[in-house]
Structures are given as C-alpha cells and as structure tokens.
Length: 70
Image (cartoon, rainbow, N blue to C red; front, top):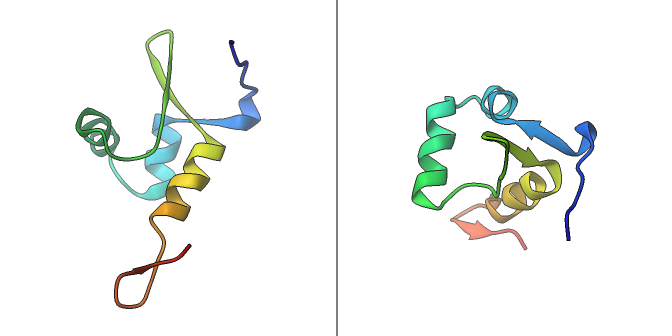
C-alpha cells in the first residue's frame, strides 16, 4: 500500500536540523547508526513524517532522575 504524504504531513531534513538545532550531518549519522526518528526516502530525498517526529520526541522525554515519561 502506497501512502501519499501532503506537504503539511512531513518536514525536510534541512528544516528538521534547523528546528532541533543540529547539523544535517548529525541526522545523517543517526540514520546510519539506526537511531533517531523514522524517515522516508523519496527519489533520493530524505523527509520525516511529523507524526513520527512527535512519537520520537515522546519516546525521548524524561522527567527527573532519568525517568522516562510514559
């Protein structure tokens, strides 16, 4: 099943790097290491679904003494 993403549903690698204050190279390293948010490769271009970024941030949320927020 093919899913068509509208422009409102995804963010580019460049925009995500700027939003999170990291270098694009950091996002590339995360992908190579298998860490970081899920991504989609479309015609040689990397995009991130906003829903996946929200899920990733939720999974990376901690509250005091390293306790993960559920």
